[in-house]
Length: 167
Image (cartoon, rainbow, N blue to C red; front, side):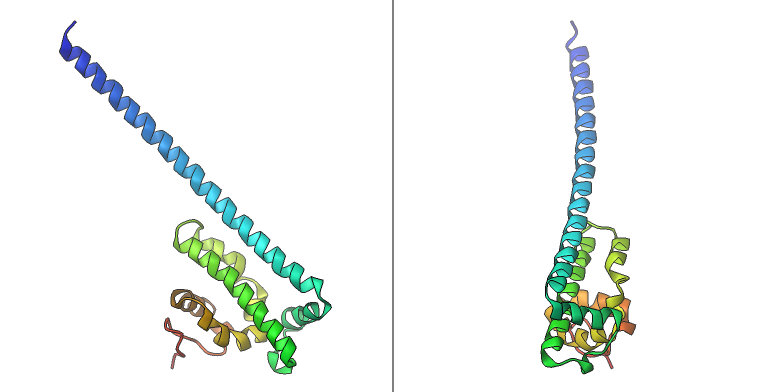
């Protein structure tokens, strides 16, 4: 048998094996991305559920939630304890939003997935406008810049990427 033919056959088999391996890897990557997306959505649902359960478990927190979300009161009408609860509600919701923002930035979620949080009415409430300028300092400058650009009308004052007031 001619060694050139054997060599050419071996090259062809090797090329086919590489193509099959690449197709398999692409499939695995798609499955990995789908798994990461599903885990991110599950995490969002669990975090929102935990936040809701925490506020429903305590009548006072339920009252704060009702005043912030349903009645849309400003925190200026709250006593100190209720202001603290409303501010913590803001921090927790913003932390969930920040996590999803990072997952979009890292390519795990799609940009439109942020609409799950962006459209929550709490983000436009007077209590949120009261709390955001204070709590935004606990977040990364890139998230604060994103949030202020997207929800600028929801804040009492806009902050730049260094968490300093604009204008």
